[in-house]
Length: 158
Image (cartoon, rainbow, N blue to C red; front, side, top):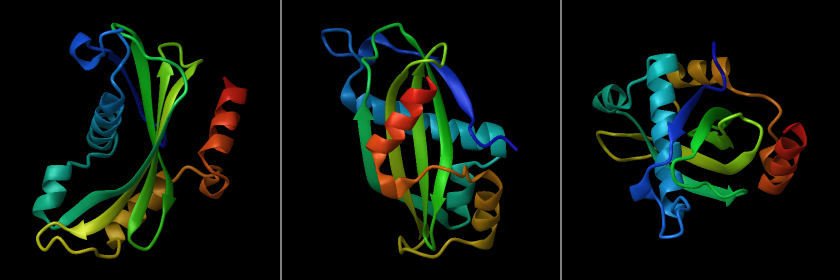
């Protein structure tokens, strides 16, 4: 099973600032949309279907760092991976690289807290989510060391 799905995307003009750089808020849109696409395309998980069954997630934390500028009409590669799992949350890492996957552009760590989408209340992860997590969890990302340590590791691999 794919543990680090990725997709390529061309940066759009309307997503950029007057200098042609990708607007900071758009990074979140690009990353979250990529993760939703990756879940559907690689694992057959449709978040709308899950919500109808009462399975939902809310973002409880984002941490983002912009490493290199992303500019209009540039092709980027977005990679997402599950890097942590707790009683009621999933930690996802989302990376943006240049089109050759050699230069790291940005990194986002997001914590998604599980809720019952019918009641809006926090719940523990259901067995099917735990089973999925066991299959796709990427080992070796030490969240406790922090994002700067992770960036240093990624830059040394580039």
